Image (cartoon, rainbow, N blue to C red; front, side, top):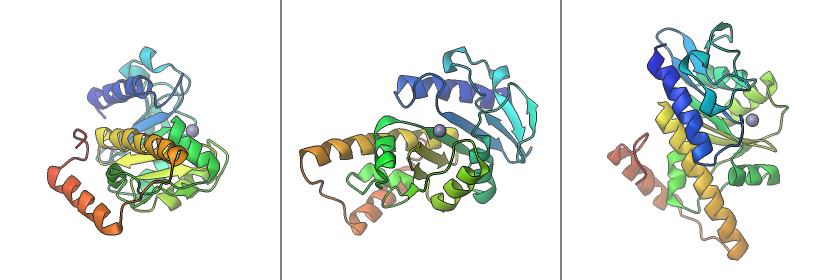
Length: 217
Ligand SMILES: [Zn+2]
């Protein structure tokens, strides 16, 4: 695990605040180095602007703390996703407002906008509630994520995954945007949803533009 990856955790932590995906010390993010078998994860209770690379927690895949400050209380959420999904290189967890509003209602996010395709799914499903920071929450989240890149956690928040931290972050950012648009559209009328064929075409465009981890199309 090199300093560049720990710096990335600091940089994207600050972006969580700048993009209004979290407040205070909320949310957590990680990257895995599968070659070395270690994970860099945001530490518990330090404001992101104060975070230095050496503060970023390093844990093993089994959760043993090996360097930096003690890890986020949600470390099991991250290690469990990495165990289940060999294609995942980074995980971002937030309580961003609109995604969490739907999660509180127990409502999945339907395909109201083509950007939902960044999730790899036609809709963002809701995993049942479990207490924060527990192995049970980690198990339920990983189970419901399946092969998608995003899941809502009932009465809690959003979990996004990606091959890189940039990709996972962008999934969290865009799905929050789609959740906000859906919320406003629903208040104003009846959202018109995309068909399976329209979503498949959007996913194809994402793939051909290599948009994962790049800019917004
Ligand atoms: Zn949380």
